[in-house]
Length: 307
Image 1 (cartoon, rainbow, N blue to C red):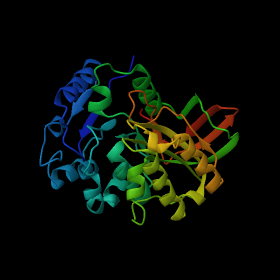
Image 2: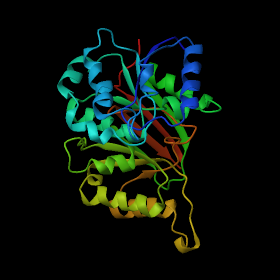
Image 3: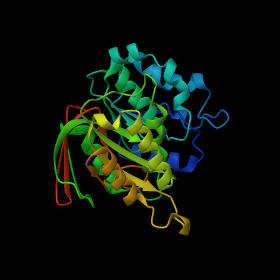
Image 4: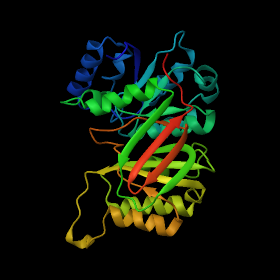
């Protein structure tokens, strides 16, 4: 049984075109006893966005002036729009209000841009996590996803084990960071990308062909970012179709090229990303990654936990 929490919704990106899913997510969370705030974010719409820039920016900046912080800040959905807000987020005020507080900022996909900007500018650890419409509002709620979500938000140590097809074995310690690969690459050369010398980079994406993923990884390599990583963990890369033209060029060849070109361990197959089943990861926390003959395990500490 999950302890009832206060959940504040935010919609800094795209309009929630699947309104029934969002309302289903609200109903599920309320049925568990959670109190939901800022429900109007679900139905806001301006062009393709969940409201105009000022409204979506207020979802983020208003967190700094709330008299009582919620337990969870949950993104309604991803899409596009977060990048337009990054230079107007009040990082100083958010740092003063949120740093070292038991509040969990949660989302993924387009929300990765805001999460990494907050991490770079304030040191604030947020959670790459399920969202209202796509996950909590799915036709069938994944018990795996929901279970990992609440476990990550309430446990001082998050431990995840999985089977990887990697050829790498060893142990690596560093700062866990990353999220959606396209959004990570969109921040290269900006003040919004964190700089870690000991990173464990976790990546995922959707609707991207292997050659596009490889091109983004080459961008990370040639900009010097991959040279500062201890390891790379790959999550789900879904909704892509290969053709005869690819002639065997698939994700496994992309991961192998990454190993060869960067001399980096690449630990594959973590259930993380846009799939129905996804783990929740605190971005910016300390991690210990261990792999032995495909048995992968990561232990994460130092993130905020709910009281």
